[in-house]
Amino acid sequence: MPGTDFPPGAASRIPGPGDPPPARPVLLRGTDRAALAVAFVDRLRHAGVPTGLTETGDFVHALEAGPMLTLDTLYWTARISLVRRQPDLAPFDKVFAAVFADAPPLPFIREAIAPAARRDDDVQVPVPADTDEVTDGGGLPWATLPPAVEASETNDGLAIPDRRPSALAVLAELPFDDLDPTQTELLGEALRATLTHWPTRRTRRHAANPSGRRIALRPTLARARRTGWEPVELVREKALDRPRRAVLLCDVSESMRAQATAYLHLMRAFTLVADAEVFAFATTLTRLTPALRHASAAQAVARAGELVTDRFGGTRIATNVAALLASHHGNALRGALVIVASDGWDSDPPDRMAAAMARLRRRAHRVLWLNPRAGAPGYAPRVAGMAAALPFCDRLLPAATFADLTRAAHLLQALSTRQVARSREARSGS
Image: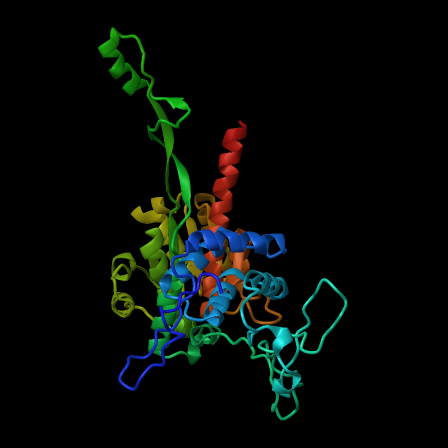
């Protein structure tokens, strides 16, 4: 075979007992492997095998990795490097046999395989050929497919496994009453991880920015002093974007005992991501923002529970909302996203609730209410406090599981983001 070297005198001398074993012939010795690979790939392309530069490079690197001791090794090296599709095997075999036509019959060529050598479980894969003739052994004996098995009632056959949720996803669908403190903490951390960013809003303040459309008069005049009061260099400015404020009110009364801890984890997530202001209320109002900023979720919730002195008592929603509006924290409500987490049970009169919520709605950007009973089938806000507050809420969202809290958090981000986009479109149109 061309390109095959044998040791001198190997055919005329019989090795003795003490002689070293004869050296095996090495294919392609002294051959430019890159030129051989390019020429072989060119033959494959003319035969219809879509071989690209990546496959050619793989073939060259494979030839350089080690010596090709046998033609079988060269065949499999070329086939693994250059063939990517099953229909290309037939033209590849033809090209390889044509290039190495003077080689002895190879066991991997399909025509050289005897029918008796095949096993009963071999499945012959049909390969398209140039002619309609189908010879015995025309399939691919090395491509053995598993037999088709129908799934029986006893599940003895093959079946596609069902996709099941993870353990954390299953826990997220459980009510808060069925979760222990460890599971609640894990779900709280997962909820915080989903809030990776928070939408921004455009403010009235401006800062120097080369892409701004507005000319900053004072910096421009200050630089004009260097050029004889001629404004040669214009300084442009752009409106500043700041994160949208978020204010959260959590009901910690007796009727919210099961949901209070989970809601505090939601409040902590907003505190860390959106720099939100968090308040808890039962009969009085308590600010929990510094306590919930702790790095540990368990310690943050524990500190928040220690600060609330009237926990698991009565409920006065309207009184606490009015107290927040009248306090020095009331300015934080201007243009903010306000979330109230409560079941709506209130000991204050409904007209007082309506008045407080009307003031809150005029000051806030959005008002959303999280109710643990809103997701129940056939739910209707028949409670007097909830019915009075509902006309002043933009959304009433269910919040009975951690999955509901996660969906609510994503909805809050989407609402604020769409509002910012509409505001920018309105400014650009004007």
